[in-house]
Length: 322
Image (cartoon, rainbow, N blue to C red; front, side, top):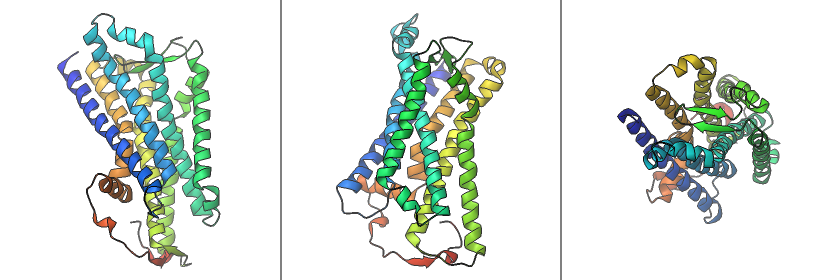
């Protein structure tokens, strides 16, 4: 392995480890806030719990997918990596793919949640209680797991090859029909989510500026709903980066394979890190409330701990999304 690949592997591992630690801290902080404090904050507990749990498990699988190559070659330069792939390569690939799909379709659930609030603000809270959200999320996870198990137990199971930065099928060059459907149409899921969320943001901006029918809402509620729309939009955008890269590989396989191995590997690591860093950018960089929650949990007190009396405002008074 060249020094360029070694540095890129080490950099990816360090950054992804930091993102994993953040996921763990975020998960612990929302659990503490929900069950061990008297806080009345409306943090999206179910969404964050599902995203962080799948993120933690998925990143551990990604570590194996990426780092098993240099570690395997270090142990056995001849057959080390191939022995890993034969032993647990299929299982690691299944887990990593499963956690990735969970993030994609949970984001669809978030988008549907936001659309329902926009279209029917009175009924949406009844449709998306925490219990119902947990049921929706578990149903999505169960369906995805079954869909992935079908090709896993077929003759066309997938096994990621880090040397080629590609998911290889046991029946190559053929692929299972479900895998082909996923490869062809999955990109439209995050792209559609981006389109819907951007449309909602533009609609809200337009309606608050030009529509004169006032609706009494808490300023805190308005900020929270805007925040969650931006979260769903950002998640879909981050995932789209990974999918667009994979689309290029499928449309131009010969051109991609002709690139130097360093370029292939670094390209994949950048795409993969865009997904691994998803929770950090969404819930720390992008979202002030969860950022303050994490900082308070680790002992970094912020001004957000001060008590503020919620203000009721007309929706026409809010001129821009905070």
